[in-house]
Image (tube, rainbow, N blue to C red):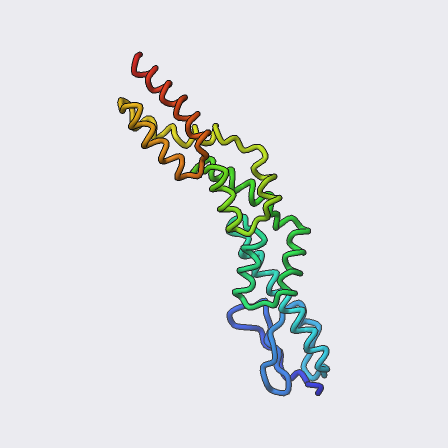
Length: 211
């Protein structure tokens, strides 16, 4: 059944949105720009009302997605989970994700590369740990492989072990192997890489002690 717009009121909490009342009852909210095309006394069909609601839902979801992305780089999966928590339907969510991907606001490869770089700088991890973390963020195996293409496990592990090694000067070889090696293994570095790094670090520490 058709309805008649009986009032258009600017929202108190958001001056850029307008509440639309049909037949004396609140019907839905609209962006002020969209609402500017409406007027009191105007008759809307059920199809027109549904279309306005759908258009507003899409605009609101897009705006909330941009807000979510403004804090830090996100993966597509993280944004998808966020919009689902906001109770948007999957079709609309995929439309928003597609639009943001086209505009390069969403880029899972760049997300993965940034994740690896940040880990290297602040909390170094081995390839297996990085793969696990990125999978938890919803990144595909193909993208993870590409993000790790230039990852050097030896240099990463060596960087991760240097601070620990400096605090263990004067310790025996066995103590160094246990404490540094254990730390690197817990960070996800493989045995071969850990062993190579230990040999280099121990040789460097012993050379410093001799000096």
